[in-house]
Image 1 (tube, one colour):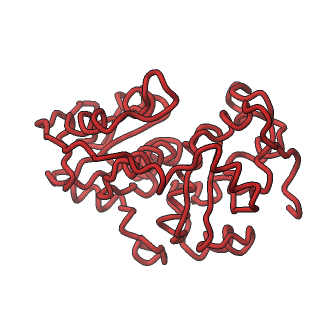
Image 2 (cartoon, one colour):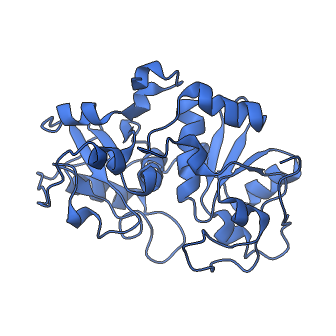
Length: 293
């Protein structure tokens, strides 16, 4: 089934591996790989792709925040990107970090961005080339964005608290054990980062991976996604919704799913997520399974 046939609200937000293969020499397209481990890119990447490191490139080195508008403009200028460039993002771990970088691009108003459906996993499974040479592009002069557009895409702790107390829609995309409070992180990771385990009161538990086909990392079609988020979890696309995880990377994947594939009108990512919430003094925490789960 093609992306156009999957029933998404905004199918243009995704591209296929076939589309990428056809546009490898397109000067108006820039492929960007973003991974959890920066050593993955040097081991081989899609031809012509550049690397954006989610920590070194997108995050401020001192504050728990993102880079300034001037730094974003300098970053993308380095790769020859202009506002007219179609930026196609992909990565490892079923595209968490690609969606995270895509989300940051939206904060700076670069809406001409796409996600490679299935990411690196699907590209590799199809036996497509992964050269190691690092491409070089003539630098551009990307105009400095007037301001970061946080309010449309990003939720802060005070807003999350107010939203939770008002009974607003919250989606916890972590693993079931993280949601119940049995673990502070995924099983294969060190159990650290927060003083307390559990979830934000009222949050629905929908692990991010339920949105993808595990064999190739592609997104499930719209009807399958609706069965999970709208049918099973009774989420309303017209209501304000906040997604969160541990540091905002997995929840950016769900943010993308709800916003672009299912057409949620007001969906924000709480990037402070459980690392912040689980360390805050005085905020409410719930433990145990989701009611009626």
